Image (cartoon, rainbow, N blue to C red; front, side):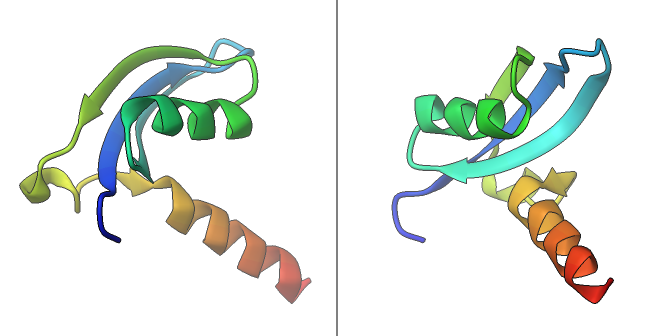
Amino acid sequence: MAGMTKFGFKIKTRGGMIVENLMVQAPARPEAETRIRQIYQHCEILECSELSQETRDDGVDLEDVISLITKQGNLR
Protein backbone atom coordinates (compact mmCIF):
# COMPACT_ATOMS: atom_id res chain seq x y z
CA MET A 1 0.00 0.00 0.00
CA ALA A 2 1.65 3.18 -1.14
CA GLY A 3 1.61 6.07 1.29
CA MET A 4 0.49 3.96 4.24
CA THR A 5 2.24 3.92 7.60
CA LYS A 6 1.79 1.56 10.53
CA PHE A 7 1.04 3.11 13.90
CA GLY A 8 1.29 1.36 17.26
CA PHE A 9 -1.17 2.20 20.03
CA LYS A 10 -1.59 1.67 23.75
CA ILE A 11 -5.16 2.40 24.82
CA LYS A 12 -7.41 2.31 27.85
CA THR A 13 -10.84 0.89 27.03
CA ARG A 14 -13.99 2.42 28.43
CA GLY A 15 -14.05 -0.49 30.87
CA GLY A 16 -10.59 0.46 32.16
CA MET A 17 -8.59 -2.35 30.55
CA ILE A 18 -5.18 -1.42 29.11
CA VAL A 19 -4.55 -2.80 25.60
CA GLU A 20 -1.02 -2.56 24.21
CA ASN A 21 0.60 -3.29 20.85
CA LEU A 22 -2.41 -2.49 18.71
CA MET A 23 -1.27 -1.75 15.18
CA VAL A 24 -3.20 -0.03 12.44
CA GLN A 25 -2.16 1.04 8.97
CA ALA A 26 -3.23 4.48 7.74
CA PRO A 27 -1.93 7.36 5.61
CA ALA A 28 -1.52 9.61 8.69
CA ARG A 29 -1.90 9.58 12.48
CA PRO A 30 -5.38 11.22 12.60
CA GLU A 31 -6.80 8.48 10.36
CA ALA A 32 -5.11 5.80 12.47
CA GLU A 33 -6.64 7.25 15.64
CA THR A 34 -10.05 7.35 13.96
CA ARG A 35 -9.79 3.65 13.09
CA ILE A 36 -8.82 2.75 16.67
CA ARG A 37 -11.75 4.77 18.05
CA GLN A 38 -14.18 3.09 15.62
CA ILE A 39 -13.26 -0.31 17.04
CA TYR A 40 -12.69 0.70 20.67
CA GLN A 41 -15.45 3.24 21.16
CA HIS A 42 -14.91 5.71 24.02
CA CYS A 43 -11.31 4.55 24.51
CA GLU A 44 -8.51 6.78 25.72
CA ILE A 45 -5.37 6.71 23.59
CA LEU A 46 -2.44 6.55 26.01
CA GLU A 47 0.38 6.23 23.47
CA CYS A 48 0.77 6.34 19.71
CA SER A 49 3.96 5.80 17.75
CA GLU A 50 4.84 5.54 14.10
CA LEU A 51 6.44 2.15 13.59
CA SER A 52 9.67 1.75 11.67
CA GLN A 53 10.07 -0.97 9.08
CA GLU A 54 12.02 -3.12 11.57
CA THR A 55 9.31 -3.08 14.27
CA ARG A 56 6.33 -3.64 12.02
CA ASP A 57 6.35 -7.40 12.49
CA ASP A 58 6.25 -7.15 16.30
CA GLY A 59 2.87 -7.03 18.05
CA VAL A 60 -0.70 -7.37 16.87
CA ASP A 61 -1.93 -6.07 13.52
CA LEU A 62 -5.48 -4.83 14.07
CA GLU A 63 -6.64 -5.64 10.54
CA ASP A 64 -5.36 -9.23 10.87
CA VAL A 65 -7.18 -9.68 14.18
CA ILE A 66 -10.45 -8.41 12.69
CA SER A 67 -10.02 -10.72 9.70
CA LEU A 68 -9.37 -13.69 11.99
CA ILE A 69 -12.43 -12.91 14.13
CA THR A 70 -14.59 -12.60 11.02
CA LYS A 71 -13.34 -15.93 9.68
CA GLN A 72 -14.01 -17.67 13.02
CA GLY A 73 -17.52 -16.21 13.12
CA ASN A 74 -18.24 -17.63 9.66
CA LEU A 75 -17.20 -21.13 10.76
CA ARG A 76 -20.00 -21.40 13.32
